Length: 398
Image (cartoon, rainbow, N blue to C red; front, side, top):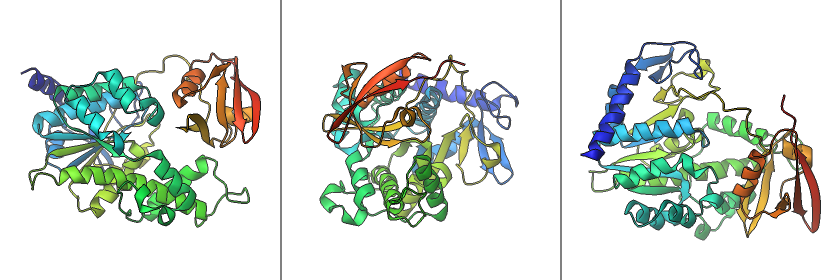
């Protein structure tokens, strides 16, 4: 009874939210959306819709995709509420997570079976190495799955596969390294353009150090890597959506909104795999442009009421990190970032931060975010055969 009661509460909360009057200008919301309400997105913009009707429609689909900003506590709270409502309407549920690579599936099975503690789950899935976002954001979702014995599936592949495709291209990577992922469906022109902007935002240049053209080989390999990522997640979802001889469970995918927006990523690959009955649900972005909330972005959007910032924004170094071969390596440096100002470069390997050895990307993230404004943080990196001592100078509080 407790499990059903929990789901009833969640659906009641969602329904009450959908019945609220329109409240323009509420803190943390967009002017075109009232907080705590669902909207469908049509040609004329967002239209309010009753939560109960929307959830009943979604529960009848083969696959429901729930987006997120990985570091948003509000997004994950919304995901939990939505999962509870869907579970009430369709108890035969499976939840897939972008945050786990395929190799840890046995660990997820043991977690759902009640055989592991939260600490063991995080340790055995190498959370700090593979995903690196605060586990406290995701643990309520994992606990919900275990509480209700809902199977969890690992959607992702090893970062090494994406790296190999980025470096050499899909065709040059041996089949034995592709983790069984089939060749992806080609990207639409709109998705290529979106990926091109992402590529530029990460400071990628061509071999001559100039802004790359769209036919630049390195950019084409980057697209193949992203499509492989989408394809892998779509395959894992499709495999469960077709299970049990036509009596398949409702399969819910938890992934970054960038893989879901406009149906370019995972949904595009699902359709290529023959799974077409898909609902894409997104939480609103704090910086969403209301003019873009139209047909095609998603089937529906929930207007998340975001809490005011708790003090000044946490500092960010502006790097992409990867933990491999017992080292923390800089994979990319954002132009204009603290990292670039410090002199950090792509392929630098962290040795120490404030004199302490660096053993995981999480250590770097935690040290940077804990640094007070106006202070200095000494860092030692290995660049080729050279060891460099640098200082990250955090700007003073304004």
